[in-house]
Image 1 (cartoon, one colour):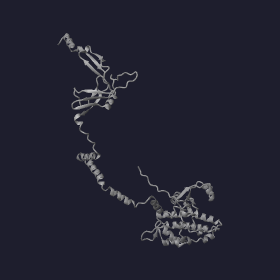
Image 2 (tube, helix red, strand yellow):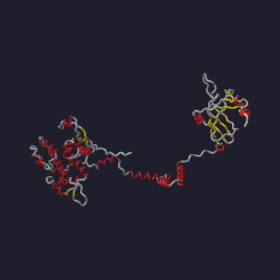
Image 3 (cartoon, helix red, strand yellow):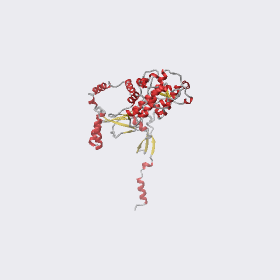
Image 4 (spheres, one colour):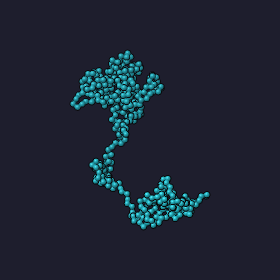
Amino acid sequence: MPSIAATSSKKRKRDDPTHENLSFELDSSSSTGTGPLLVSFPSLQAPKDTPFKRYGRRKARKDNQKDTDDDGGKYERTLVVGEAPAVEFISNEEESRRAADSGCSYLLAVHDPRTSKIKILPSQKTPYILTRTVKALKSIPPADAPSSLAYREARTALGETFGTKKAKAAIRAQERNRVDVNAMKGVMQHVVDGIDEKAEGLLTKDEAKDLADSARLVPPFSATATDPGDIYSLNDIIPDAEMKALNITLIEQNLKHNDHVGMLPWKHCKWVNNHIKRLGQEEDKSKARKRKLKMLLYVSTMFLFRRVIGHPKGLDKDSIYEKMNNVPTIVVDGLLSRFTEMTRGSSVHILTSAMSTKFMAYLLALCLRVDDFVSNPKNLADDLSLSIANIQAAYRGLGCKLKTLTERERANRGLSDTLADTKFAVLTAPVQFPKVRTAKKKS
């Protein structure tokens, strides 16, 4: 076992005498120069004998400002360039600025073993990030970026070679659905010519409107009429032959005594009864009064016809004649021809949904004429056992507008003030039908 003295001697030998007097010193000899520069090489180290140069612009001097920058030089920080036999190095300003903004700072220190001092040299605080360029590749022009077609073909080839069954099936389906633009160039003009040829038979906007109007289940109308009485002609609602066949003699004779109810085809219509009662209180015996009586008689006949023909399975003509025995045959035949349909090989007359809509339009158009083109939908809704909404929709289909009447308009028509909030169906000229609403697509 060694002695204590020997141990102490060995310990003193391990101690480096240069560390005992180690000191730091700031080298100010190059305070007016640029000083050493810090650089970072990306994945390639430059040879030791590679010369580097720093290029910069001289700063514009301002009052009370020193002629040196933060690094001790007179130039702005710009570029560091180095050139080796095979590679060129140049600093990337953007990457260097990003490194400077990272928050890290660096100092250069050099240890001098002779004097046991570490010198802190002046330098910039952040490094230059260098990029490299191979000289042999500078003469080769850069390759163009692959086109979308080339990229798609390469991707398809890769998928067909290494893809799963599902991926290969998706690639084949995509190829089947793809349109070959180059193949379409030769037939494109032919397709365009075919479209133009077929488009010649399409309807114009006005022609389409006329076609839609002609398909409306309303009486024949005049779209250019400036008077409501000329929109729906009475002859188109009640043919002349049927109008002449209506006999109002007994009704006229009993108007004053109000005994006309039992002489009507359908005596339960309050709207008809009230109108005939008002006519009985007038002394006017002109042709206009007789024409209005015939219209009221025809309205009563239509109410009876609706009641008879409303059988769910329909009726044959003989049964209809029997139930409408007090109505002229020509009138019954006219109603059957205009408002009923028969199935092939059958003699049964049926009031279909479309015919019911048409029948309601003719009935309300006749009632509008009796009411001087201003009707109260509620009165007819009660007689027809329908909701007011249905009657209002039928009036809109005729081109009527639903609105309340002013005080003067009510006074001119002899209406009570209790009807101030009632919406009347008013037919105005020129007629304007409601626009067809199209359903919005659900998102």
